[in-house]
Picture 1 (spheres, rainbow, N blue to C red):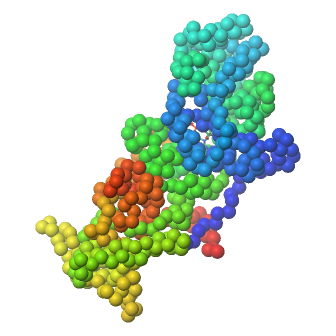
Picture 2 (cartoon, protein in one colour; picture 1 turned 45 degrees about the vertical axis):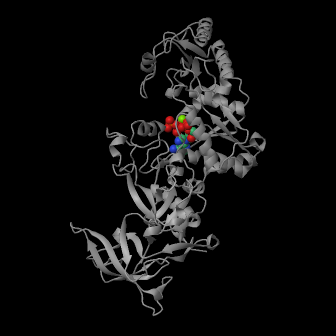
Length: 570
Ligand code: ATP
Ligand code: MG
């Protein structure tokens, strides 16, 4: 098969780190981190960040910390924590004993907040959330100071301690940094550092009822862990001056360098965790691991391999400019990987019964079939052939148009690994529907070639009817019809773009018996139909398969249009 050149695309962060090492910055050390908030499942965008952070330290010899940014107890759940760790491991990365939590630092962060109050660089504000928003100003108008901004240090210290003690209701007070209400950067207009939330935390239980804001916790967590390169997505560029302000005004043990890169956007896909949660909660999908979801759990269930996801992340590169990556490129990556790995089998999705009139009634032959033409070491298997078969209904036409070369009355075709057959009769029901075909076979063509050299124009897949395994097969299409469903600027909702036909369930597909007992997660190519993966919904005797991807390579077209040239086969 021809492949596309997979030369390593540019990655400016690699270059920065290489320079830093060259000049002995951080004494030549590299420590990155992956800091998910446990408020949803990881998605393919996170994979980009994971591959980048773990990939860099693998390349330069360092470590990557795994840190849960668990500052928001209302939205965080242990289910998410477990799934996130599972998904990072599945992707193939190991954080060893470097598992951390922002909540490990709550006490330290509190002490630092007290220091800031004492230095008159933070104050307790008693405006409501509404008022704070109002006072903040806009991009074009400066903010107004809160009437509490100049409240005495002693009073703020007392109130902050009592906030911690649980004396006040949610929303009555917050702690704010005292920076600059007129700053052109809104993030510097006295941002909130702490708010009261009387909620249990999955790690600290009821110890705290005030929680630090992400912006107050994040940079200091990095500093506490000695992170050298704090890599994040572009939307945090405007927050960097604030992180720097905290780091400069608190006695932290170090000052990590923040580097921003453009997040991954994928066509026909939403990536915000809030929207993904809505898809789950509103029942548009069956769950976070629905195979139509861009979550790693969904992709895994769909049949994606970790290698395919990693190759994709390498291929898209790392830059600063926002772009929409074509979904077809992700599909190309999975096809490329499965082509090498997936065993070929035969399965018929929409069967029509075929009787081979001149084949002995009691005979069964076990014919040799190649498991993977890309991998001779995969060997061969035996596939039963008998008088009654299933063929794909759409491989037959009673009145075929010119370009239809498959089975038709009077026409001969090849059955893969088996014989030439010729259609001699068509049986219809009372409504005129074709329900059965009668064919004859040519015994001299066993294995698929005619000794007299005659040719046929089509080779069809098939399954022996008495040996067929009944299976449910789930076919997936894009979850969204619009290329950029997250774009709601025209007033529409991302939900408006949901594809009503994204899932088609085929209740009784017929599969060759060799895959009757295939365990959940195993992947196959059904010849001519695509790659499929066994779903955990399978029961003994009734496997359920998800189609991972079709065989049709739409990326080839995209690549051609974009002038990406094919690499020669070595
Ligand atoms: P939300 O969707 O709620 O904004 P988030 O995407 O910021 O959440 P986090 O759990 O905070 O989710 O993300 C963890 C890390 O993954 C962050 O460093 C973030 O920058 C990175 N990340 C998240 N989404 C993407 C994306 N689409 N592309 C690249 N990196 C991403
Ligand atoms: Mg986030």
